Length: 304
Image 1: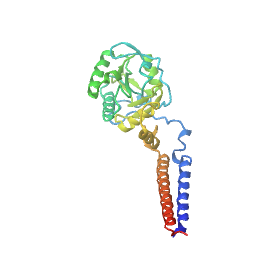
Image 2: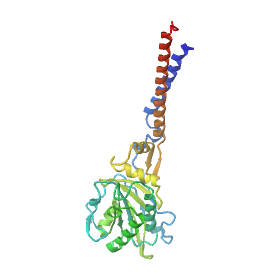
Image 3: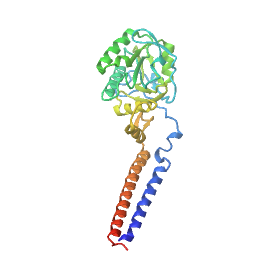
């Protein structure tokens, strides 16, 4: 019986080596991600998205093209909700920013975007003005700071956390600044003269503290956990704990889907690492137990 123990330990060691090889192996299914840039997606809205009366010709010029990795033109000048001139860059440098492009007099979709954002942020432990900020910019140059102030009052009250007014900013601006900002993030829209309103898509964008576009979330409903992970990932390691880093290792942001998905190979590697540690711990315990028993037999004179 004792003679079989070396073989048993050898089998364990072989298993450990196999798992180590698996963990060190190149990344299989997700191994190609670093070789391609973010996919370009155009979104023209779904559900209560585009006006049904919008003509196909108009739709050709409407959509959202992902510009992940692009830096915003932070020198652009806008007006805040009080009418004071502000530089876009004044909202960056310290924490991630959620950027929303709407127009305040929008009859439907823009309201749904802001409502959806509010619903998504409500369950998070992170708060506007603390771990991240929100910058909402009107792409209608005719809109005034007064209207922006009214919108801010509605949404900061609805969000309902202390300090929200210091972290959620509602801006208006002139056409050149608006055009430069919307172009930088790939937000394409058209004014429909017949209907007297803008035709546009719906999305929110996560921007790093340095002003780099990092994530897009499309539609009017944004998974809260995805938003949390995107804020952590774009925070330049200022947010998150060890558990969050493990989550980001196992879940990758997919630009094509605009959401996080399981990174299969990373998850397998993590599972392999846990198994490796468990087997290693088991072998250490077994070795110690066998040494103790052998020593006890020697002391009793039972071992030759």
